[in-house]
Amino acid sequence: MIFGATQPLVVLLAAVGAAAGGLLRRWLGIAGAGPLVQLFAAALLGGVLGALAAHLHLGGSTALVAICQAMVLVPGAHILNGALDLLDLRVTLGLARLGFAALLLTAISGGLMIGLALGGQTLALTAPSSSAPFYVDVIAAGVAAASYPVYFSMPWRMIGWPVVVGMSAHAVHWWALERGVSLAVAASLSCLLVGSILVPVAHYMRIPFAAVGFASVVALVPGLFVFRTLSGLAQFADAPSPALLSAAASNLIVASITVAGMALGLALPMHVFTGVWRRRHEL
Image (tube, rainbow, N blue to C red; front, side, top):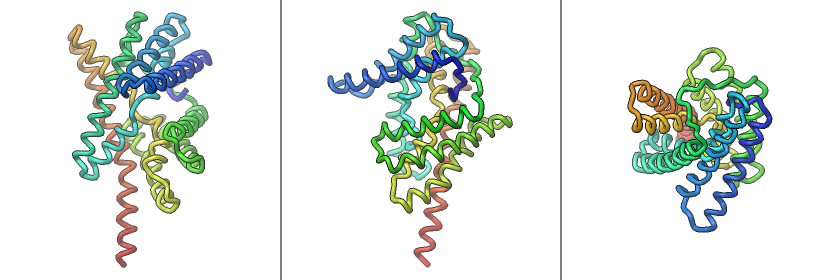
């Protein structure tokens, strides 16, 4: 719904497919399969269902059936934490996290593209995304922010903070995009709001900022642009053209600067608060 899906059947197929992918991942985990196999299989299932939705001719938002299932799998925590580690000069840890996230994203993208190809579909590299109405965007962001703490087994007492702050962040994000601000700057402003509110809250309530902070901004992670980048590179390897290379490079740049902006928006309040706290105790 955040990406502009308006048909209930599209939303239902995406939800059912994501749930089926979650069950498949649990079954594979019990069978001893690692995270790469689990994510590849879940994304493959999502791609097949996305291709099926395209053949049902449900409208222009059918691609979201596959994309949204894959977005649930995106290792956003590793990506953001890796970027935050680099900003804190923990270079080795940051590169390790980003490298692991890159492997997971490759598995997800591979499964998604193969699943779509089995149904004769491909992932468009420059498809325009629709803007959801303000109230739909904010409410859907709140649902996403409430869902991810469940994935991470967070205590129930913590869930309210990411829901309220996540909805506020998406309100800022929607407002900025409607006024022509770039995606990276809009995401950075949203994360700056999240960090400014949740850093002191996490400190005084003794709850992990990484958990509540990521849950608040998870809907802003640019996983779609990563999928488009890898899809463009795969298509370029098969049929090289300047247009494919340009589209893939554009998506990669947008994804990179958006993640960097999000990390900066989250890290800046943390550093300011830490500096003020240390100065108070030194005095």
